[in-house]
Amino acid sequence: MLETEGYLKKKVVGVLPSMSVEFGFSDGVSKFNAINRCTVSVAEESDGNKYQKIVTGSNAANMYAFAYLDFSKYTANAKELIIEFDTKINTDRWYIGLSDLAQRPGESSRGSYDSTGVVFTQGTKDGKYYYINSDLTWKDNFFNCWVHSRIEVNYESKTVSYCITNNNESAKLSGEIDFYDKSASKVTGLEIYSYVNSVEMGIDNISITSKSGNESDDERTVYILTEDGDIAEYIYIDGKPICIGRSDIFNTIKDLLERVEKLENN
Image (cartoon, rainbow, N blue to C red; front, side, top):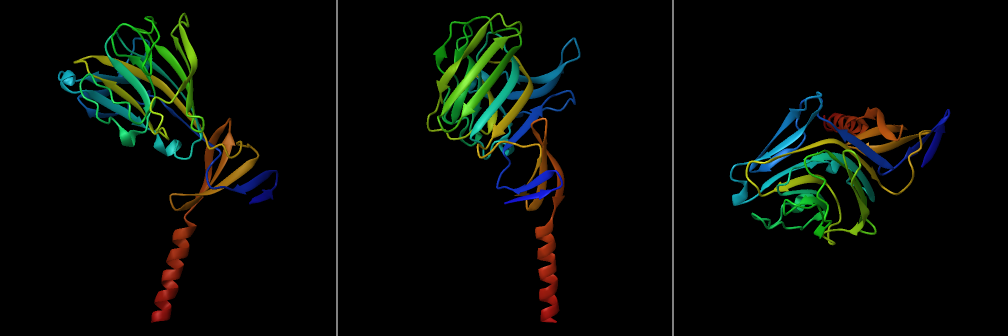
């Protein structure tokens, strides 16, 4: 359904063509949830940059440490997903994964990493080299520095394209790989997993864009859809959806009907 009003078109849709969000830590607020044998906090570097710090517990090796960022509200109808972030790990044991959080952490225990629900993971399981899913890359220069990752997830082909570089781009990993768990059908969060006692890692500058695949976002169109029981209107500015109006018309109609019913019964 398409309606024009002035130079902007109005279009009723089931879902927005794309959703985007950025997670930073300059506000000093943690965005990750500490689920098992770890703590999350916001740390500050010498240059004033703030980032999410995750520290494993002193007993993490007896089981595992697990934390996650839930971004399911932005990927619920996605057919494609693009996520970028920066991480800093030492030569410990870290799995940084994109996964369906409803299935995580599965049957993981101590040094056994259950990949159920995991679409893509990177990090190290031996403390020496970097791994993509279970593949050894033989790269050892992604530690003790900030590493930037750009990951594109295609749900239809069940493939992941990735580009990972260290802070001065002297090392690079890129390619395309199948979903780690081929039965996984969605990504709802970013997970951090380790089984080493009292170690820390950092993550920062997280940006997410999901595409429904139905159409492209048009900055000359007002998209109208139902959202949380309301009628919401969105426009796109610089590729990002901005809500410009919201109406609780459904509740208004419900209230009116209840009033009419009371009048009829009196």
